[in-house]
Amino acid sequence: MATVEVLTSELVVPADETPVGAVWLSNLDLAARRGYTPTVYFYRPSGEPGFFEAAAVRDSLARALVAFYPLAGRLGLDADGRVQIDCTGEGAVFVTARSDHYTLEDLMAEFVPSGEMRDLFVPPTPAPNPPCALLFVQLTRLRCGGVVLGLAVHHSVVDARSAAHFVETWASIARGGTGAAGRDAPVPPCFDHRLLAARPTPTVLYDHPEYKPEPEPEPVHAGTASTYASAIITLTKAQVSALKARCAGASTFRAVVALVWQCACRARSLPADAETRLYSMIDMRARLAPPLPPGYFGNAVVRTSALATVGEVLSNPVGYAARRALAATSQGDDYARSLVDYLEGVDAMNLPRSGISRAHLRAISWMGMSLHDSDFGWGAPAFMGPALMYYSGFVYVMQAPGKDGAVALALSLEPESMPEFRKVFAEELARLQL
Image (cartoon, rainbow, N blue to C red; front, top):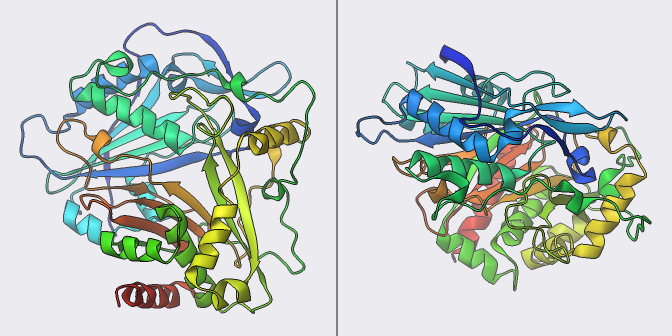
């Protein structure tokens, strides 16, 4: 069994003095999954001196934490018991490690998101409750000289886009930029979460079933960390183009998810009259009126969903599922404001966060997370993705490294469904090219 030797573990504090006080968290922050999101970045050895030298990585992290100072703080509580960020400047956890087992090529051939991979390449995290740290980083050097950069960021503080914003700024600093103020660096972060505060008179215009316990006529067969199989599947640019041609007007994300939805329904052998729900997470930054600032740093995604019967998904062309996916991802300002107002009237910190029924899927787009911008000075990562899937029915759609226009899926399904899914998905991809 593969092991990783931990060499050092320390707290990295911001390189300069940073503001103190509290950052108020919005209802969307409180409604996010209470826990850490583990991600991994794989880097091939460049042959250059100083490649991911620990002291240089630590120094650039300290400088990045100046602009992103809340990540050096701790999760806290205000006087009313509401979760907030306490900007204490205590620092992020930084671990260095070594693996004598893996080369990068071996790891890329073997890697799928799993508890084992998360434990190897992402630092252990505490219970995600106050006063926990918010950012954990592990730099692992492989047998071949390659590097795995593993991160765990508290989801109450950031969504995927904000996490990418931090990594891109950190990488810019490591490349020799000056951080958030640099000419070529990402935009400075905005920590004004009150831009997503509830309205003085809450107005709930939608039902928001995604934030309520899932009604089930039968016991919920929810996947857990120990009951899923995961896979990484790549679609070529030609396959993506052919698929989008069958899903008129659909984005890459919607078209790919539509095909996954169809194939998952088939692989799970679900009854035709069973209901299947496609959940999506939609970034609302540009959809609000007015839009949020480009550097908004926090949770600005909302859960939406589309409901259909299995028979409808399977008996229609893939374009039908894509249109249903479009219906689940087209909401604007009124929907987001309705949700924030709805959450004001419930216990947003204790919403249902269990797995989902085995008839459903939860799809997340990481298409906007640029691999090129995660270059710390020695080249873009050979792979970036989730280190762990939380339960079966998760789908991440990402850019495929080094392949312009290609798409990578990180997918989890029930162990008994995954072999059939891989078979029918491959058959559908082959059919696309006929």
